[in-house]
Amino acid sequence: MKLSAGVEWALHCCVVLSQSPDPVPAARLAEYHGVSPTYLAKQLQALTRAGVTQSIQGHVGGGYTLTRDASEISVLQVIEAIDGDQSVFRCTEIRQQGAIPAPPSTCVTPCAIARAMYRAEDAWRDALAATSIAEIAADVTSDTHGTAFPRLRKWLAATGA
Amino acid sequence: MKLSAGVEWALHCCVVLSQSPDPVPAARLAEYHGVSPTYLAKQLQALTRAGVTQSIQGHVGGGYTLTRDASEISVLQVIEAIDGDQSVFRCTEIRQQGAIPAPPSTCVTPCAIARAMYRAEDAWRDALAATSIAEIAADVTSDTHGTAFPRLRKWLAATGA
DNA sequence: GCCACCTTACTCGGATAAGGACTGTCCGAGTCGCTAAGG
DNA sequence: CCTTAGCGACTCGGACAGTCCTTATCCGAGTAAGGTGGC
Image (cartoon, rainbow over all chains, first blue to last red; front, side, top):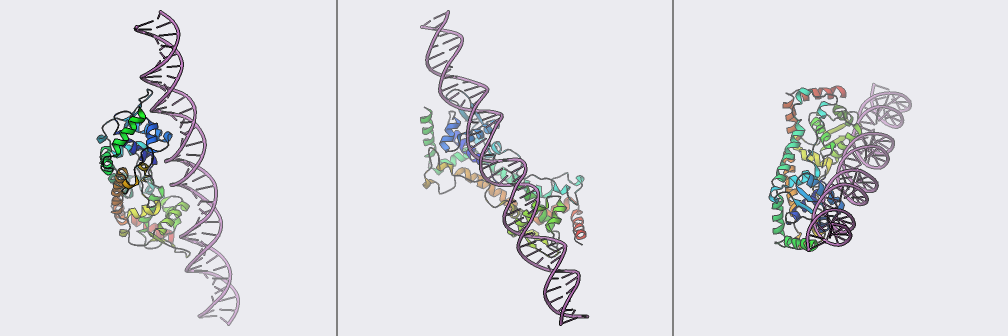
């Protein structure tokens, strides 16, 4: 089990976008992070489809912006935008197959194994839903002693002009 | 992101093994669950490598048994045996790449994004580690009003004899 | 001088190949019980 | 009748293809600004 690399990229992009009032083009985000521009574009499109970001097409000052304040965007929303909102564990109901299949009447609730997996998954989702992009940005600020984002904004303004 | 189907199989097999004092061959487990015998064998071998099960080779009464009481085997141990114990989220340290790389001196700790992901993952692992195979077996018993395991043991004895 | 049109440059968007992991399979290695021959 | 060597059947174990999804890429669709020609 592994999480798509695009999730990491998308999260970093959301943090960057939270620091820029102006739209930022996909190519600029890719250049800033040193990743594939075309593949990053795919992730940004997914974010837009999920309503996390919005895009301004055509027009020189175009690019991507967040649709709402960074404090209103959770890490979980970004992950589900990229990776899908389907469950990590998928019960195939093998209890209803094989030599001694369980009668459907006893299968109105998920099997005990699936319940345990779903419980753990809920704990995972809760933790991710409780963390917002704004909180991560605040952590980055304290990690870098406030140096990261001013430099970022300066770079964005320089390349944008 | 998705969890291997082998994880579900392995969990079901552990529950079955917890109900059988005698070794159960891989082919019998596959027949009981209605899954591919050869692929299930692969999962059982992984469980043995991880020390969750032990195998008795040769000799007609051979097969797999649990290495310890089902209450001492957590769901997490089974998952890690099949799927590996590597982290779901893998930080590629893109903060140190691109246009404005972070100096390594500020990267002694994981970046804020990775920390958030690891926190959520710890919550997931904690929930899985807190659930044992014995608890799942107890849930199955109550789900089926105590009918499932007697029938299972009878079937195992019948086909084994 | 003013307006409308066209060209242009820039941006996103979806459809299209390559690589790797999960899925599924096969045959060889190992071990104990049974059989049969010899003492 | 007892012992022992050989045979056989059954089991696990690791090495080998097929298929789906992730990764990576390309070209087309859309938009607004700026220039140009006409009125």
